[in-house]
Image (cartoon, rainbow, N blue to C red; front, side, top):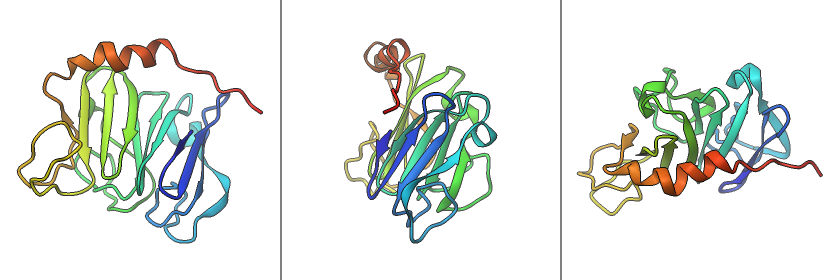
Length: 183
């Protein structure tokens, strides 16, 4: 499960269903609405939306979320900038989950997705890290791991020397995936 700004998402252990609740002002809940939100966890989807196995993990940020499906696809919804990396022609905000093209993250399986305030990160099993932003950077310090020239950073970009993440991040997530216990 993950908690964002005024919203939460959770993945069920047995069937990989994604559930969300909270304020959905920019579509971050993935439920198709961008206004009132919901007070109770509501099902976003499972195998019929995210493919075989459903969802593996979710990360929530300020006004967006990233989902990693069991078939190794990255999905997003909320206040993301629509770009050529997405399999859809929809524009922001994305009110329902939208899938990134597989070519954005190389050929290695993805082990981690994470969302910050206005930026995102994906780490692959090969230890490669990719970052991008939902906003334009204007030369200030960013959390992307590289300098910017003020242009839009909406395409996932591999970090230079990102192989360092293989032994520090990717390995842990491959070997120790916790099992969620129902209460």
